[in-house]
Length: 272
Image 1 (tube, one colour):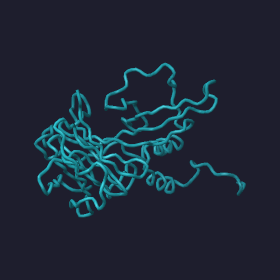
Image 2 (cartoon, rainbow, N blue to C red):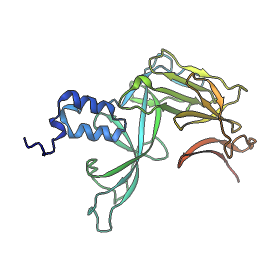
Image 3 (cartoon, rainbow, N blue to C red):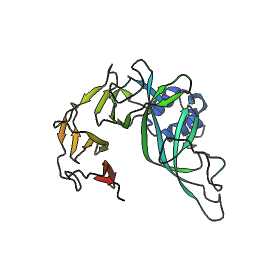
Image 4 (cartoon, rainbow, N blue to C red):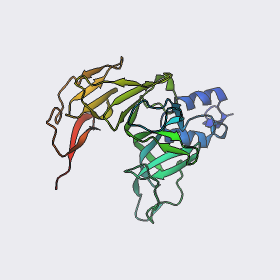
């Protein structure tokens, strides 16, 4: 073999291929990697993993049900050059991998399946040809309903995994959720049960997000808290515009938004 010739990935030793596949954490990179290397198509990723049933009065199903952490990913997709006379088309696309190698398109604003796609949307998505940039991930807790497959656990407002390790290093991850009563709970990989984080003032939590490698939560009154490595709550070290504001009677909740490296508290309410 010519030493200057570029070696194909599939020609690498299996142990190196498994090592590479185990370090990928972007779902689309994992899918592309499996697709280009047939021996790894069923060995490089999980589309979900089992967690204990949430211990909260707000949630269903019963504690005996099998519950799984699932995720979908929002991408910015750009069609290849020359695909259309008008130039490359760009789309926002939410994808969920149902099983290894099989994905479906979801509604951007819900977890429902897209019933109709625009006429100009590509008929075939070749993930090796399209340019795709990951925007964000959305996590859900689903349980096995036996008759309808995986169904979302009722009573859950927000689910978060940190760090994002869908491909490897699952033993380092923790999962958080906020239920409809504003209770915040966490589960460390390997724990038998969920643990609850109680607010110092017994306020409800509205949202959670990751900022600068830390999990943060905002409560009913807009106060932002940081969850430390010991799973304790401490006030956010710097003031945030929009936090610590009075609760409006028509308030529909506080949300944490990370944009361009900054953390914002967004206050939403309805007005006639």
